[in-house]
Length: 507
Image (cartoon, rainbow, N blue to C red; front, side, top):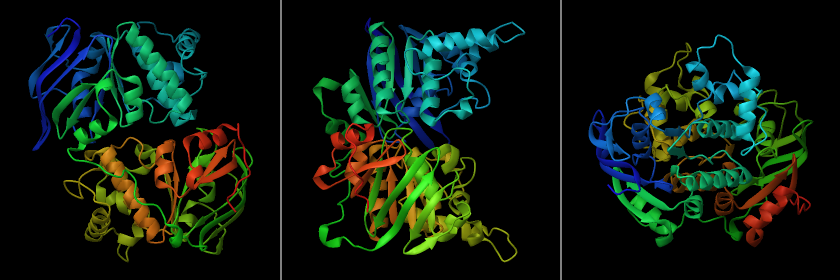
């Protein structure tokens, strides 16, 4: 172990029953470096990080911190050793304030009988001075997903870390927020803090990290200096094979149809969006772009009568809809896949089969209203095969699946009601490159089958790669449309930021 190595993992193994999650893994982290970890879901990244943080215990192998062999029995002990972990899945207490969440560990350790609210709010403001203008007094439940992620990061920054683990920290952040985070990461590294950065986004790895280690199928594959390799090299090492086109072929000009799956006219919700009009043609994939808070998700939810006091007109396959609530939308054949997979997309503790049938359980029920397990499993099996779902068994809990396969279960739940149109909000957030390719293929196949597909995504390459047209939302209005050669990141960002607001070409 060289002098500049702060953390060294040697021959680490971990099994869960018959499943070997880690198989003799090696890894080392140098002082003051930003070290990326790359690998498909199921590669062993999360298991390794959970061991480093004391959440799990290894079956064999050793961990050395500053050259000394250590055992990390719990996250609390990991913090005492100087290890901080910002998890991909947000784990905050929604019913208390931002400040209380940030300083919860400190407050629990205090012997005072009274909470110094003003004191912790003042400290929280100091932390947020370098991150965001979030009010420390607000309840966490009232924050957007992106701001909740910033609170998680702020918690980690209050710890006296020597090793900081960031697991997909930008998944819910805007580009501006992500750039602030990258600046903070470099400042921390310059102070000698070592950062383990887990991400599926190659651009982030190659712009911000010093080295990258690749894992595949529970094994360590390689470690390289970022300056010495290409994103293609990393992807090929992750999947163990060449990945050609990341996106399926788009609709050809001769395949275009004038038939409308969806038409929306003058959709308005007074506080969130105004006078939104657009159409979705048969066979195409339509994208919604825009900055966080622009109203992308709110418009989709408004169309589906999920929330808000919405006015305007909606036609589905030429039929005018009068929706009272989301159940009416489901019955009409229009469904919405939430960006918050763990909160709204799937029920983690329920079986795969039960999740798939959850949107319309009467389809798998008897005449007496009792769920028939055989029907439920048959439905999940049919849709699971269609989506290439990888699982141990359909009665296993969804929590046992990788992120990509959890997302496929969420999509299967949408397909269980034979939808005519699906709004998919951040459909590949937090899933690996291999799963992304599969999900993009699924969306194109559905569009080719006549299902209307609308994709809402913060990843501009995804929108450009998978969509035939992209509508750009700015402050609750459609600021423009891009298609063909005009579908570039620069054009989308100009429209999204309001610096180049063009008339909507959605009609």
